[in-house]
Image (cartoon, rainbow, N blue to C red; front, side):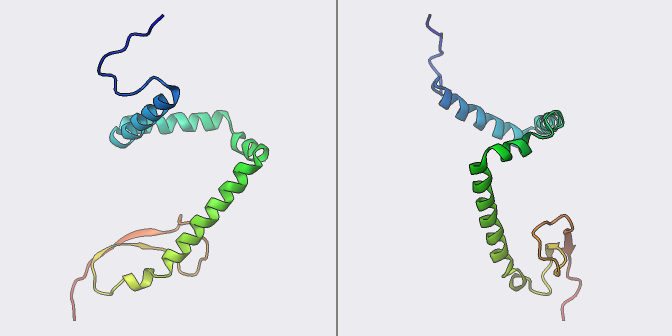
Length: 125
C-alpha cells in the first residue's frame, strides 16, 4: 500500500528526517508560545515526579555518559572562571546599566545568590 503524499512535501519520510523536523517545530513552538512552554514544563515536572530515581539509575548504569558529562562540565566551569577574570575591567564607575551582583568571597559557580541590579548615574564630577 502506498502512502499518499502531497506534492508540496518539505521533509522526507525517513525517521531521522522526521525527528529533525519535529525537534525544529518544538524548539520554535517553545520559543514563541508561552502556553505550550508552560504545558511542556508541567509535563516534564509530572514525569520527574513519577520517575524520581531515573537519572540516578541511568548514571549508575551508564558510566560512559557520566564520565563524558563530568568532562563537559569541567570545561564549562573552566570557561566561566576564565571569563570572570576580566569582569572587573569591563566596569567603569559612572556608567549606567544593568549589572549582575554576587558575593566576591565565594568560589563556587552557583549563582542562586546573585542579584540583577540597575545602576543609574545621577551626577558626574
